[in-house]
Image (tube, rainbow, N blue to C red; front, side, top):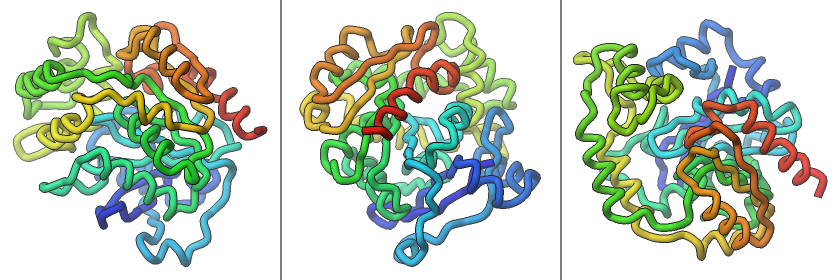
Length: 325
């Protein structure tokens, strides 16, 4: 089970974080309560972590609650359209030496989705900083996937006092450009939403989606976890327009300058068939003052989700080294 922590973000936004640490999760709620809470927030039973309904005080009250220590803190940041539960298989393999917490970033998962945003880079980075400070995690190891990795390294560059180490999972530092944004807008327009069933979600994202070259059941499962049942069928828990707005704030620019400002030990991990190419990944390692590199054979962009064991084998030695330095 994972324990839910309600936290106030940078501008008062309500965020949900999930403590995967075995010690804290085991003593909060029953298995049946956890499953019910998970369905209430993600509306799918597929590979979603069991979640307790026990809450931690938020906002100013956080300062009066001594943080629970269960090892070196790790904060996991999902990518665009993802949610904290996507980290569950990988988080379970990090071991008891860490206090492992995953955040539903604004606009995602069980966190607030303000109609007017903001969904800027500054907002995402400020939220992560607020969570670290209010949960007493600093100095923390930040582990980010895709957009969450960009948030992680921008925070590490801006607030080195909060970050002990960094893991970047399959995120490019180069600009993707306007054509990429147009392709994403067209892709969202092609979704046959609402979907009549979760099985239809699985099938479309795993096989019928024009972006799928060969059948990919794991991709279907990934998207099934971020669908909610509505009166007219199954729709994403996020607003696609908000996702496009979030993406608009970073796809047009390169992010090499902020990467070069990261001073903590950093591991760049890519899936061999992911979106981050080997040459760019190795250049990122060269630009980083304390960079290291790992790749996972047979894995694509969703490397921590589809290959959690191989991902953990790549990341765990790095984390162990960070703890001994």
